[in-house]
Length: 175
Length: 251
View (cartoon, rainbow over the protein chains, first blue to last red):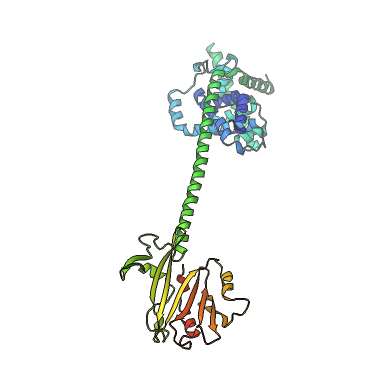
């Protein structure tokens, strides 16, 4: 017999599984890890359902869980990731299996530029510019101050711009 | 292109990423099923923990009850004479061709009567003879001990006890302190070694003094037997002997 927690999780998964997966995927750059962490996010939401007081929306709450599980996972994977990146420094978006994740050609350039940014810049840009969360919601998800969100976003956007200009320059040069 | 329009371009490009990136629905359904299995396992685990918790609580309760029963058995004075081999309060021995209960060293520890009263009271000539009998209260054994103190005059002071079935000193005392005067008997309430006691003294030439001591567990009866002359066995002697009783070892 399904309890009310299970019903909530079922409903939330229907509504938010895509956006949560994409958020984690853009942070980890690994679709398999993103799938595992998406599952972990919803499982944690089930397990700690009683702590959700409804002060924020369930979407914000789910994103804060997703952020925490991802950061925890990345922290644990840090030494492994270091060696992975040493031998495979740039993840080629073309290698993504199409039956799992699809990215349209028009967004590949900006996605690659985003992937090259440092983690703190990337997460703020994803939440604010891609997911459309407010500054307050972003601060809540990242568990930091609003001013920190503003300043990180500003620096992140400058870094992204720099990266895109560099990439377009490279593209011009190779043409 | 100015900075503002560049930013707007980037913003639009970023917003587009959300729609251009797609996670396969087939994979999403696969993860959903894995999640459902994980939740199911968690529910089973949680239920198992709850059941384990209940079982633990029940076993602890039963263990405590068991210990309590044992403890009550021990507290029940000479009840449970055969608690365990280590705590055996009496053994059966053949005396005069008949098997009789005899108190063990452990059993002697719970005897309220003094063994050396003769050192304190001149009229008592020696150690008391202890008569032990074992009765049953339900499934429990109840040891009854009677003490017979010899006197130099050839009479005996007898002490025995019975259970205070009321469990209340107040209630039991009513039996020994009647509201109406008893014909030929003077009843006086006294205190003996911190316990309520009732001295019944004859007001006629017949009869002898008796002392009844009421505790929460027992009622002690002290009388003179084989009395030749009522002046020989006076109430003062009974009270002095009763004051030597050690009610602290009463169980």
